Length: 240
Length: 131
Image 1 (tube, rainbow over the protein chains, first blue to last red):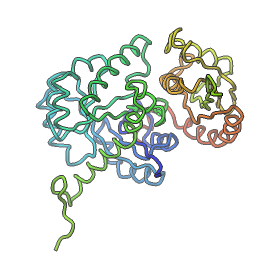
Image 2: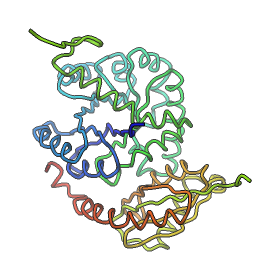
Image 3: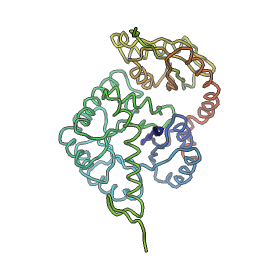
Image 4: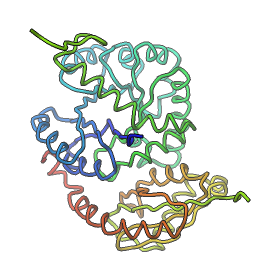
Protein backbone atom coordinates (compact mmCIF):
# COMPACT_ATOMS: atom_id res chain seq x y z
CA UNK A 1 0.00 0.00 0.00
CA UNK A 2 1.47 3.39 -0.96
CA UNK A 3 2.42 5.75 1.83
CA UNK A 4 -0.19 8.40 2.52
CA UNK A 5 0.87 11.90 1.53
CA UNK A 6 -0.27 14.93 3.48
CA UNK A 7 -0.95 18.51 2.48
CA UNK A 8 -1.46 21.78 4.30
CA UNK A 9 -3.09 24.19 1.88
CA UNK A 10 -3.06 27.27 4.07
CA UNK A 11 0.25 28.65 5.25
CA UNK A 12 0.53 32.40 5.25
CA UNK A 13 3.65 34.37 4.49
CA UNK A 14 3.22 37.67 6.33
CA UNK A 15 5.56 40.30 7.73
CA UNK A 16 4.81 39.40 11.34
CA UNK A 17 5.28 35.68 10.70
CA UNK A 18 8.26 33.42 10.20
CA UNK A 19 10.20 33.45 6.91
CA UNK A 20 9.11 31.05 4.14
CA UNK A 21 12.26 28.95 4.49
CA UNK A 22 11.46 28.18 8.09
CA UNK A 23 7.83 27.41 7.30
CA UNK A 24 8.88 24.94 4.61
CA UNK A 25 11.45 23.28 6.89
CA UNK A 26 8.82 22.95 9.60
CA UNK A 27 6.32 21.48 7.12
CA UNK A 28 8.93 18.94 6.10
CA UNK A 29 9.67 18.15 9.72
CA UNK A 30 5.98 17.63 10.47
CA UNK A 31 5.58 15.25 7.52
CA UNK A 32 3.80 17.28 4.84
CA UNK A 33 4.63 16.58 1.22
CA UNK A 34 2.67 19.52 -0.16
CA UNK A 35 1.98 22.99 1.20
CA UNK A 36 0.26 25.99 -0.30
CA UNK A 37 1.72 29.38 0.56
CA UNK A 38 -0.30 32.55 0.43
CA UNK A 39 1.43 35.93 0.37
CA UNK A 40 0.03 39.10 1.92
CA UNK A 41 2.21 41.27 -0.30
CA UNK A 42 2.30 40.69 -4.10
CA UNK A 43 5.90 41.99 -4.18
CA UNK A 44 7.03 38.89 -2.28
CA UNK A 45 5.86 36.79 -5.22
CA UNK A 46 9.09 37.73 -7.00
CA UNK A 47 10.84 35.24 -4.71
CA UNK A 48 8.32 32.47 -5.31
CA UNK A 49 10.50 30.63 -7.82
CA UNK A 50 13.36 30.51 -5.30
CA UNK A 51 10.94 29.35 -2.59
CA UNK A 52 9.62 26.64 -4.87
CA UNK A 53 13.17 25.45 -5.64
CA UNK A 54 13.95 25.42 -1.96
CA UNK A 55 10.87 23.28 -1.34
CA UNK A 56 12.00 20.94 -4.12
CA UNK A 57 15.39 20.53 -2.44
CA UNK A 58 13.70 19.70 0.85
CA UNK A 59 11.19 17.36 -0.77
CA UNK A 60 8.15 19.55 -0.15
CA UNK A 61 5.96 20.48 -3.08
CA UNK A 62 4.97 24.16 -2.92
CA UNK A 63 1.76 25.49 -4.42
CA UNK A 64 0.81 29.14 -4.72
CA UNK A 65 -2.41 30.17 -3.05
CA UNK A 66 -4.33 33.43 -3.11
CA UNK A 67 -6.45 34.32 -0.11
CA UNK A 68 -9.20 36.71 -1.09
CA UNK A 69 -11.02 38.85 1.43
CA UNK A 70 -13.19 41.00 -0.79
CA UNK A 71 -15.49 43.64 0.63
CA UNK A 72 -18.09 43.16 -2.13
CA UNK A 73 -19.09 40.57 -4.77
CA UNK A 74 -17.80 42.87 -7.54
CA UNK A 75 -14.39 43.09 -5.92
CA UNK A 76 -14.34 39.30 -5.66
CA UNK A 77 -15.10 38.89 -9.37
CA UNK A 78 -12.42 41.43 -10.26
CA UNK A 79 -9.82 39.57 -8.14
CA UNK A 80 -10.80 36.21 -9.63
CA UNK A 81 -10.48 37.58 -13.15
CA UNK A 82 -7.00 38.84 -12.35
CA UNK A 83 -5.67 35.86 -10.41
CA UNK A 84 -7.27 32.65 -11.64
CA UNK A 85 -4.72 31.89 -14.34
CA UNK A 86 -1.71 32.65 -12.16
CA UNK A 87 -2.29 30.82 -8.87
CA UNK A 88 -2.92 27.16 -8.11
CA UNK A 89 -5.40 27.56 -5.27
CA UNK A 90 -7.90 30.32 -4.61
CA UNK A 91 -9.50 30.58 -1.20
CA UNK A 92 -12.22 33.07 -0.35
CA UNK A 93 -12.79 34.27 3.16
CA UNK A 94 -16.58 34.44 3.41
CA UNK A 95 -17.15 37.07 6.05
CA UNK A 96 -20.53 38.21 4.77
CA UNK A 97 -23.49 36.66 3.04
CA UNK A 98 -23.20 38.48 -0.31
CA UNK A 99 -19.55 37.54 -0.76
CA UNK A 100 -20.22 33.97 0.39
CA UNK A 101 -23.03 33.52 -2.12
CA UNK A 102 -20.97 34.91 -5.00
CA UNK A 103 -17.98 32.76 -4.04
CA UNK A 104 -20.17 29.66 -3.85
CA UNK A 105 -21.61 30.31 -7.32
CA UNK A 106 -18.31 31.11 -9.02
CA UNK A 107 -16.46 28.09 -10.43
CA UNK A 108 -13.12 29.89 -10.32
CA UNK A 109 -13.13 29.63 -6.53
CA UNK A 110 -11.62 26.47 -5.03
CA UNK A 111 -12.03 26.87 -1.30
CA UNK A 112 -14.35 28.83 0.94
CA UNK A 113 -13.53 29.41 4.57
CA UNK A 114 -15.48 31.10 7.31
CA UNK A 115 -15.15 32.86 10.60
CA UNK A 116 -16.09 30.57 13.51
CA UNK A 117 -18.39 33.26 14.89
CA UNK A 118 -20.70 33.39 11.87
CA UNK A 119 -20.08 30.06 10.13
CA UNK A 120 -23.49 28.75 11.17
CA UNK A 121 -25.41 31.69 9.79
CA UNK A 122 -23.49 31.89 6.50
CA UNK A 123 -23.10 28.16 5.84
CA UNK A 124 -26.87 27.64 5.77
CA UNK A 125 -29.01 25.54 3.43
CA UNK A 126 -28.84 28.08 0.60
CA UNK A 127 -25.07 28.31 0.72
CA UNK A 128 -24.73 24.52 0.98
CA UNK A 129 -26.88 23.98 -2.12
CA UNK A 130 -24.68 26.36 -4.10
CA UNK A 131 -21.53 24.66 -2.82
CA UNK A 132 -22.87 21.24 -3.83
CA UNK A 133 -23.46 22.48 -7.39
CA UNK A 134 -20.10 24.17 -7.74
CA UNK A 135 -18.07 21.44 -6.01
CA UNK A 136 -16.09 23.84 -3.81
CA UNK A 137 -14.21 22.74 -0.75
CA UNK A 138 -14.98 23.99 2.74
CA UNK A 139 -11.86 24.62 4.76
CA UNK A 140 -11.34 24.55 8.51
CA UNK A 141 -8.31 26.43 9.79
CA UNK A 142 -6.84 25.34 13.08
CA UNK A 143 -5.54 28.85 13.71
CA UNK A 144 -9.17 29.94 14.32
CA UNK A 145 -9.10 27.77 17.44
CA UNK A 146 -5.69 28.76 18.78
CA UNK A 147 -4.87 31.72 21.03
CA UNK A 148 -8.52 31.93 22.10
CA UNK A 149 -10.21 31.95 25.48
CA UNK A 150 -11.82 28.62 26.50
CA UNK A 151 -15.25 30.15 25.90
CA UNK A 152 -14.37 31.30 22.38
CA UNK A 153 -12.77 27.93 21.66
CA UNK A 154 -15.87 26.06 22.84
CA UNK A 155 -18.14 28.27 20.77
CA UNK A 156 -15.97 27.85 17.69
CA UNK A 157 -15.94 24.06 18.13
CA UNK A 158 -19.72 23.97 18.51
CA UNK A 159 -20.34 26.19 15.48
CA UNK A 160 -17.88 24.41 13.23
CA UNK A 161 -19.04 20.98 14.41
CA UNK A 162 -22.62 21.70 13.35
CA UNK A 163 -21.69 23.48 10.13
CA UNK A 164 -19.35 20.72 8.99
CA UNK A 165 -21.89 18.01 9.75
CA UNK A 166 -24.37 19.82 7.52
CA UNK A 167 -21.76 20.10 4.79
CA UNK A 168 -20.77 16.43 5.01
CA UNK A 169 -24.42 15.34 4.84
CA UNK A 170 -24.69 17.20 1.53
CA UNK A 171 -21.49 15.61 0.21
CA UNK A 172 -19.36 18.77 0.29
CA UNK A 173 -15.64 17.97 0.58
CA UNK A 174 -13.94 19.20 3.74
CA UNK A 175 -10.27 20.06 4.06
CA UNK A 176 -8.34 21.03 7.15
CA UNK A 177 -5.36 23.35 7.21
CA UNK A 178 -3.30 25.08 9.84
CA UNK A 179 -3.76 28.66 8.58
CA UNK A 180 -0.48 29.42 10.33
CA UNK A 181 2.04 32.14 9.65
CA UNK A 182 4.46 31.06 12.38
CA UNK A 183 5.99 27.65 12.85
CA UNK A 184 4.72 27.52 16.42
CA UNK A 185 1.15 27.51 15.09
CA UNK A 186 1.75 24.72 12.58
CA UNK A 187 0.49 21.27 13.47
CA UNK A 188 1.30 17.78 12.23
CA UNK A 189 -1.04 16.02 9.77
CA UNK A 190 -2.18 13.50 12.39
CA UNK A 191 -3.09 16.34 14.75
CA UNK A 192 -5.09 18.10 12.06
CA UNK A 193 -6.88 14.89 11.20
CA UNK A 194 -7.60 14.21 14.90
CA UNK A 195 -9.14 17.66 15.04
CA UNK A 196 -11.54 16.88 12.18
CA UNK A 197 -12.28 13.53 13.80
CA UNK A 198 -13.31 15.36 16.95
CA UNK A 199 -15.71 17.55 14.94
CA UNK A 200 -17.16 14.90 12.63
CA UNK A 201 -16.55 11.62 14.40
CA UNK A 202 -15.53 9.97 11.14
CA UNK A 203 -11.98 8.68 10.88
CA UNK A 204 -11.93 8.15 7.11
CA UNK A 205 -13.20 11.67 6.42
CA UNK A 206 -10.72 13.10 8.89
CA UNK A 207 -7.80 11.38 7.15
CA UNK A 208 -9.00 12.44 3.71
CA UNK A 209 -9.36 16.06 4.83
CA UNK A 210 -5.61 16.37 5.24
CA UNK A 211 -4.41 13.99 2.54
CA UNK A 212 -6.35 12.90 -0.55
CA UNK A 213 -8.78 15.83 -0.81
CA UNK A 214 -6.23 18.68 -0.79
CA UNK A 215 -3.86 16.65 -3.00
CA UNK A 216 -6.62 16.09 -5.53
CA UNK A 217 -7.54 19.76 -5.54
CA UNK A 218 -4.00 20.92 -6.31
CA UNK A 219 -3.48 18.20 -8.89
CA UNK A 220 -6.65 19.04 -10.81
CA UNK A 221 -5.87 22.77 -10.69
CA UNK A 222 -2.35 22.18 -12.01
CA UNK A 223 -3.83 20.20 -14.87
CA UNK A 224 -6.19 23.08 -15.62
CA UNK A 225 -3.34 25.56 -15.61
CA UNK A 226 -1.22 23.49 -17.98
CA UNK A 227 -1.08 24.58 -21.61
CA UNK A 228 -2.46 21.24 -22.84
CA UNK A 229 -5.73 21.60 -20.92
CA UNK A 230 -8.83 22.26 -23.01
CA UNK A 231 -11.68 21.38 -20.68
CA UNK A 232 -12.30 18.70 -18.01
CA UNK A 233 -11.59 15.35 -19.69
CA UNK A 234 -10.12 16.92 -22.83
CA UNK A 235 -6.45 17.79 -23.30
CA UNK A 236 -3.92 18.12 -26.08
CA UNK A 237 -1.87 14.93 -26.29
CA UNK A 238 0.09 15.65 -29.42
CA UNK A 239 0.58 18.63 -31.71
CA UNK A 240 1.63 18.50 -35.32
CA UNK B 1 -9.35 -12.24 28.56
CA UNK B 2 -9.86 -8.87 26.88
CA UNK B 3 -8.36 -5.99 28.80
CA UNK B 4 -10.84 -3.45 30.09
CA UNK B 5 -8.60 -0.52 29.27
CA UNK B 6 -5.87 -0.56 26.67
CA UNK B 7 -3.34 2.18 27.34
CA UNK B 8 -1.47 4.20 24.79
CA UNK B 9 1.77 6.07 25.33
CA UNK B 10 2.15 9.29 23.39
CA UNK B 11 5.66 10.54 22.79
CA UNK B 12 5.39 14.30 22.50
CA UNK B 13 7.75 17.15 21.89
CA UNK B 14 7.35 20.55 23.53
CA UNK B 15 8.08 23.45 21.25
CA UNK B 16 8.57 26.42 23.53
CA UNK B 17 11.12 29.18 24.11
CA UNK B 18 10.93 28.37 27.84
CA UNK B 19 13.08 25.70 29.40
CA UNK B 20 10.33 23.92 31.27
CA UNK B 21 10.77 21.84 34.37
CA UNK B 22 8.78 18.61 34.66
CA UNK B 23 6.59 20.12 37.38
CA UNK B 24 5.83 23.21 35.26
CA UNK B 25 4.83 21.05 32.34
CA UNK B 26 2.67 18.85 34.54
CA UNK B 27 0.81 21.89 35.89
CA UNK B 28 0.45 23.41 32.40
CA UNK B 29 -0.90 20.14 30.98
CA UNK B 30 -3.30 19.65 33.87
CA UNK B 31 -4.62 23.19 33.60
CA UNK B 32 -5.00 23.05 29.85
CA UNK B 33 -6.66 19.64 29.75
CA UNK B 34 -8.98 20.54 32.64
CA UNK B 35 -10.02 23.69 30.80
CA UNK B 36 -10.41 21.91 27.48
CA UNK B 37 -12.15 18.75 28.67
CA UNK B 38 -13.81 19.87 31.90
CA UNK B 39 -14.10 17.71 35.01
CA UNK B 40 -16.44 15.22 33.37
CA UNK B 41 -14.34 15.01 30.22
CA UNK B 42 -11.24 14.45 32.28
CA UNK B 43 -12.92 11.55 34.08
CA UNK B 44 -13.63 9.94 30.71
CA UNK B 45 -10.24 10.78 29.22
CA UNK B 46 -7.70 10.43 32.01
CA UNK B 47 -4.03 11.03 31.33
CA UNK B 48 -0.75 10.81 33.17
CA UNK B 49 2.63 12.31 32.44
CA UNK B 50 4.95 9.33 32.62
CA UNK B 51 8.25 10.95 31.78
CA UNK B 52 9.70 14.22 30.56
CA UNK B 53 13.24 15.01 29.56
CA UNK B 54 13.97 18.68 30.12
CA UNK B 55 16.94 18.67 27.81
CA UNK B 56 15.42 17.11 24.71
CA UNK B 57 11.92 18.44 25.60
CA UNK B 58 10.49 15.01 24.85
CA UNK B 59 7.87 13.48 27.10
CA UNK B 60 5.59 10.46 27.39
CA UNK B 61 1.91 10.77 28.22
CA UNK B 62 -0.29 7.81 29.08
CA UNK B 63 -3.97 7.72 28.12
CA UNK B 64 -6.63 5.11 27.27
CA UNK B 65 -6.71 4.12 23.60
CA UNK B 66 -10.28 5.41 23.30
CA UNK B 67 -9.12 8.87 24.37
CA UNK B 68 -6.21 9.05 21.98
CA UNK B 69 -7.81 11.38 19.45
CA UNK B 70 -9.27 13.68 22.11
CA UNK B 71 -5.95 13.98 23.89
CA UNK B 72 -4.18 14.61 20.58
CA UNK B 73 -6.59 17.45 19.78
CA UNK B 74 -6.30 18.85 23.29
CA UNK B 75 -2.52 18.94 22.93
CA UNK B 76 -2.77 20.43 19.44
CA UNK B 77 -4.96 23.24 20.73
CA UNK B 78 -2.50 24.21 23.43
CA UNK B 79 -0.97 27.45 22.23
CA UNK B 80 0.65 28.99 25.32
CA UNK B 81 2.55 27.70 28.33
CA UNK B 82 3.09 30.16 31.16
CA UNK B 83 2.07 32.99 28.86
CA UNK B 84 4.67 32.14 26.19
CA UNK B 85 3.62 30.91 22.74
CA UNK B 86 4.26 27.18 22.74
CA UNK B 87 3.12 24.02 21.03
CA UNK B 88 3.08 20.33 21.81
CA UNK B 89 3.51 17.92 18.93
CA UNK B 90 2.69 14.26 19.22
CA UNK B 91 5.59 12.50 17.55
CA UNK B 92 4.72 8.86 18.03
CA UNK B 93 2.16 6.64 19.74
CA UNK B 94 3.11 3.34 21.31
CA UNK B 95 1.27 0.50 23.02
CA UNK B 96 3.85 -0.14 25.73
CA UNK B 97 5.88 2.11 27.95
CA UNK B 98 9.03 0.15 27.24
CA UNK B 99 8.75 0.69 23.52
CA UNK B 100 7.79 4.34 23.99
CA UNK B 101 10.89 4.94 26.11
CA UNK B 102 13.23 3.29 23.62
CA UNK B 103 11.66 5.24 20.73
CA UNK B 104 11.90 8.49 22.71
CA UNK B 105 15.61 8.01 23.31
CA UNK B 106 16.11 7.33 19.60
CA UNK B 107 14.19 10.47 18.70
CA UNK B 108 15.93 12.70 21.23
CA UNK B 109 19.12 13.26 19.25
CA UNK B 110 17.40 13.60 15.92
CA UNK B 111 14.83 16.12 17.16
CA UNK B 112 17.28 18.14 19.22
CA UNK B 113 19.32 18.94 16.15
CA UNK B 114 16.30 19.81 14.00
CA UNK B 115 14.52 21.91 16.60
CA UNK B 116 17.58 23.89 17.51
CA UNK B 117 17.90 24.79 13.85
CA UNK B 118 14.22 25.69 13.54
CA UNK B 119 13.99 27.62 16.78
CA UNK B 120 17.04 29.65 15.87
CA UNK B 121 15.14 31.17 12.97
CA UNK B 122 11.88 31.87 14.79
CA UNK B 123 10.28 35.21 15.54
CA UNK B 124 12.39 37.40 13.35
CA UNK B 125 9.94 39.60 11.46
CA UNK B 126 12.75 41.24 9.54
CA UNK B 127 13.46 37.90 7.88
CA UNK B 128 9.89 37.44 6.72
CA UNK B 129 10.70 38.04 3.09
CA UNK B 130 14.07 36.34 3.12
CA UNK B 131 14.37 33.00 1.45
